[in-house]
Length: 84
Image 1 (tube, rainbow, N blue to C red):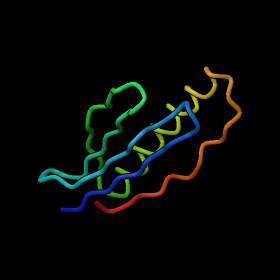
Image 2: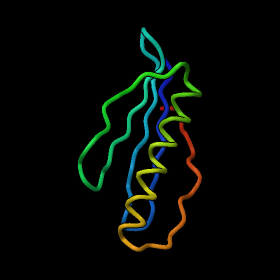
Image 3: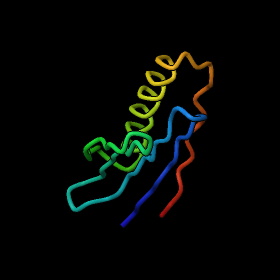
Image 4: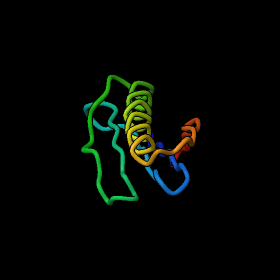
């Protein structure tokens, strides 16, 4: 079963861990916010690539929101996936 993980860390403001994995009914993705201790409930996608794309889009939108609230000018880096 394929499983992938990608950290998204931006200074002191954002620390997210994106995850994707295969299940019996399809690819799934989720995001854990390490700073707040919260998680986005797992959601299904059409395939693993779509799961990664959707997770990255949600994570970048969240990071942008957090950075703008903090008046930070830090940039959102590229997300790099690792097989786990």
